[in-house]
Image (cartoon, rainbow over all chains, first blue to last red; front, side, top):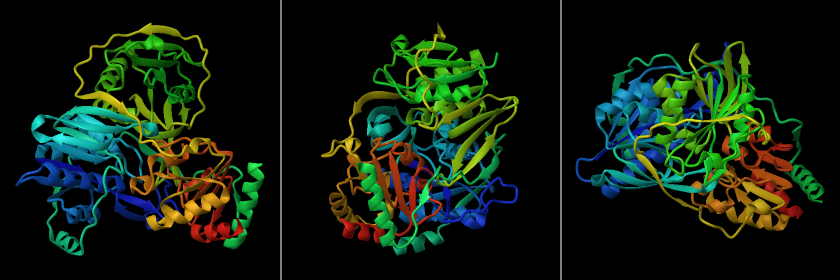
Length: 254
Length: 311
């Protein structure tokens, strides 16, 4: 089997924030990067499936969109055990549907048996790339999956779709399919130091970005949200803070 | 005439709360509001909210949500009615087809939208970025309909009891490629966090599984029930029964004391109507402070140790 996992290197905002001069994004100096948490679960799930049902010659291929910087996160997936990685070379911010359009020809070219994406990214929280990509690839899809039962020969998989409140919708989906993976579906493995070193040496194939068309939205203005209405700051030492909390609790529980 | 189309959500024969919220959101855009009800028997679901001009009932064979069915019906409604905007909930169901429709038809698109405005002919949506720490106003391509996924609980639900006209549509639906089989209830627990007056809620900030007994002890001393945010359930440290948030329980205790919870949108949706919210976090920009009544920027362990000594 061949499983393609689409991953994103996300931006993590620290304790402070300043905006770019045009106020359309956060100043990059205030951002760190990381492999999107959902995508580490998606990668683990692909590796787990390969271990459970796979045979010799199976492949887990990681695909991402971005500049050379994002190879850092792709190498994490390689260190976890992915076989190959392909980067669609582009830079700057893209909306999720544009990302799906850029991923589409690369994923199609791999003819995968299964495509896994994270449900959403922690920085943009659109929950859209996977479902849009499935449409462009004309693949059956299920969003927000917390369990996969799949016999590759059967042409279908049974998956749990996690609804609000934790209710599970057991869904049967034809394969090949695209599934968006929810956190908690598995325990992403840690890469060994040796695997990390080996991943450093692996070649990441790059392909030029195709024509993505018009963006589906454009940020006009980014700003710090208004702070809580009347949120009162409790200052002082931990003992003083604890004392105030105890008072407030006592008063409010009366 | 340009209209705003809302797709009703329902589950096991009942409308979901988000439907009324979408009607309120739709009203922000000023156009006539049309609600589409896609169900085996749409007339059993009362979508006649105040502010709704028309309800379109679309009967389908499937009793429960399937993304191929909703996609096909929405595409048909878009072609037939040419709405200026389509509003869906930012819910698990909509995540399964909304972005597909937008990608296929080249619509303007944004999700997790929590405020909406209209400027002239243009729709302006506000959504969050970077873990809810910043907001952004986004604009859309000219001359295209927009499809927006609206954050649950961001808008107050519209009142029922409107008197819209009711029409019905018929759409041919091909066989679904992803089919509903059954529902399974979340694993039960020994505890009902939704009835507690006082929740001590812990999150990723506690760092290690080994820290949990300390907070179980603290909760007992304080007379609180212990609840958690999603990462602790994902890690397998606590059961889903104690999870607060969209994929867990919605709670409204008198006091919600959050230690080391950054406040992901999905968490806030499950607790923001609590009577009094007290948050302790080392990150002054943590989104939890945007809903808290009292906040302390401090190490949660220092504060927890002091609280334990007090009680």
